[in-house]
Amino acid sequence: MSKATDALSAALVAEHAAIYGYGVLGAHLSGAALAQAQQAEAAHRTRRDDLLVRLTTAGVRPPAAAVAYALPFPVTDAPSALRLAVRLEERTAAIWRVALGPTSGGDRKVALTALVDGALRAARWRRASGSQPGTVPLP
Amino acid sequence: MVFTVPVKTRRAVLASAVGAGAGLVVSGCWGRGAPAPPKPNPLAPALAGALALVDRYQATVAAYPDLAERLQPLLADHQAHVDALRRAMGTPSPTASPSAGGSAAPGVADDPAAAVVALRAAEQAGQADASTACLAAAAEHAALLGSIAACRATHVEVLT
Image 1 (spheres, helix red, strand yellow):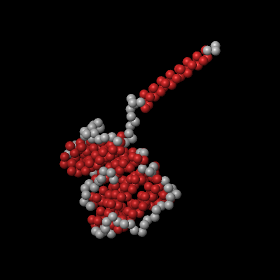
Image 2 (cartoon, rainbow over the protein chains, first blue to last red):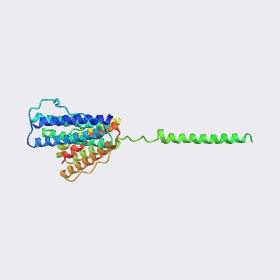
Image 3 (cartoon, rainbow over the protein chains, first blue to last red):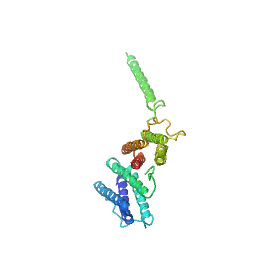
């Protein structure tokens, strides 16, 4: 295990958790917000699958998904579902941000794309929660 | 005869010693000596880019005060980038406006809608620049440059 594959493994753990979280919060959303959650979950699944290949190719055993993940707060309605969506994207983006340092080349490019995508989704969820413009200086 | 050879040799040695000494002096002047310009900080281009975006937003808000409410949060993000880059560079913030010593104030479009379009284009270019810098950066600067790229991407979306 190198520092780069450690960072990618941490990102995979975060992606597993994000996929789980979207499964929970999607049940409380409808309409455009539900579609947004489904798109986000699909994006995290794609990222997860890419990481599985990347780590296996590097000779590293990828961390498996847990059966369940502890949520930071109870998700009982649409507002709390939106709050969790923001939190999931912020957390996942932060772990991809950390992965930028130890990685290089193609791996760093993947980490940067994942960070940018996560920042975009977090900002969209903040706007969906009523916060304008929903950007932060250092996602 | 007995002495000429050592004398010539000694001269040669002296000459080469002087040459070497001169070489040291020269390399001292142009290499590590004080007169040589300091090596540019690797984050200097990123700082210049962040300052240019601050300038552009300030000029746009000055020309179209009605846009201030919409643009102020984005301008604040760019000012935070300037601060974060300066901290990473170990450069103290100047007390004057952040544009002091920066590029000339950019022109602002003739109507507010076109001005917003121009800001969006500047954000897109800025995102591309920060992404390129992130991918080429040393490990210790990659995260900051990546975050700046990601922030600019969110601005592009807000201005669309």
